[in-house]
Image (cartoon, rainbow, N blue to C red):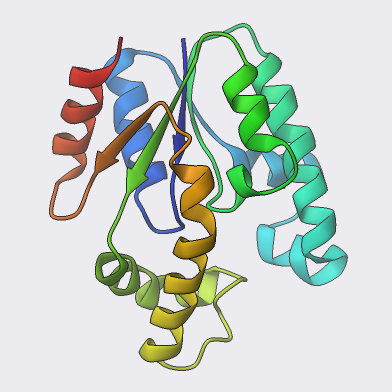
Length: 173
């Protein structure tokens, strides 16, 4: 069993993923952490030294390696991962994978991301809350097509990590 968590940055994929993995007694994997380990650089360093296109290629390569593993795990993807190349199709075509979209509303995402801005290379230069909100709105519009291809969608606004994990467990086959 492989559970892949999908959603916009700040949607809680890492927090929910860690809790879900603990509950299921499986490994928790984070795609960004796996990329950092392979590159021996942080995500901001990869973006600044190699650029986003290089990062997206590396992301697809590491995703493929992780999906080929035999073990059970919960994997948290980056917010853009399903939207680039053939990543979403690869996820859908991999046996024993359940993809879960952690659907988060615009205002909740803005509240979370405004305090995390400096550690996120794609939004660190956005100057005002209004510009950040417009940026998120545009991305959600573009990415929802990919996110909605997930096997399961869980609405997470106003829910605790434990409530989201419970909802996921109730809906797993």
